[in-house]
Amino acid sequence: MARKTYQVIVRGRFAPLDDEQRAALLAKADDHDVFRAKFTEEGTVTYERSLLAFTFRCLVPATDEDGEAVVIGKAEALAAAAVSGIGADYRDLRSVSTDLDNIKIRRREHRYS
Image (cartoon, rainbow, N blue to C red):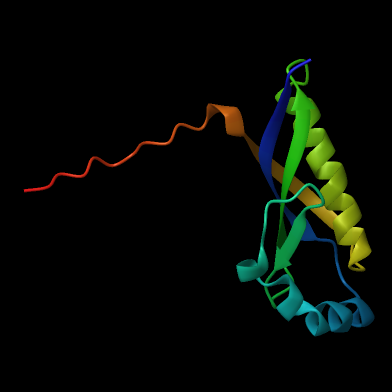
């Protein structure tokens, strides 16, 4: 079975937060800044201090038989666990995936005069 890797971005909204959850998330906000985001198999949660929405980035290994729905399902399960791990609930998940094998790198031609 051939292995593939998908890069997945899951976006969602925080479910209504109580004062304690808000304080805890704001205390950790610098650790979840977008500039710290990475695509890893564990995934990375980022959010802004407005605490309205979050983004989760991850890499999902898959086989040729796994369809996009399976990959997105795995990514959304990871996102749900990550958001729960930082002390919040979620809603309205939307995801997009990219098969890294299908990315074509266009190299710029260098012209020397």
